[in-house]
Image (cartoon, rainbow, N blue to C red):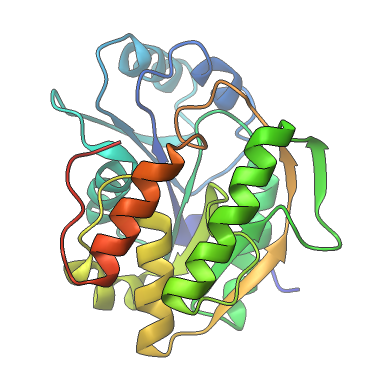
Length: 238
């Protein structure tokens, strides 16, 4: 697989109240020479920690966006994508469940696709620390509902590591209605409907039980997805 250069890539990191985990993320940037866009919409010291790291490690191209209001996972990613100016961009959870190495794998897959999504449920996936049984069952049931409602063929729509050709994203972003955790489903659905090529890639994953991004309220997600399917904007943020 041909590696796409880091300099052509931007990674958006939604960082809502991540002061307890962001140090670990920053310590594992693996020499990434592309653009890192952190979106901070919480009330803790996440942005200050990122600023201090950026000052001490000027070799990294870091942008820290600050918002006083809660944007939601999807809303934060959308704001980050608006600031991305590279041919390829993606997003990655701030909790360190997946690494920069895995994002490079997804970016490289864009040689032959418009979108590459990490998957925890493929044969060659390496889940170092698995989800608890309750969350695992909830996640699998959620994927079944997604397939029934939206016809998406993917095993794992909610993995917090995805990469895109920017030109494909720019086509569908004006249509996006979701700002919460259902954002992942909507962005894949709209890309799929428009005919863009989406590939699912096995990923190395270490579940973080305390993650803000990977957890979701099943009933609320289902309600929002039904509203989305009916052409209505899901309420609120998450």
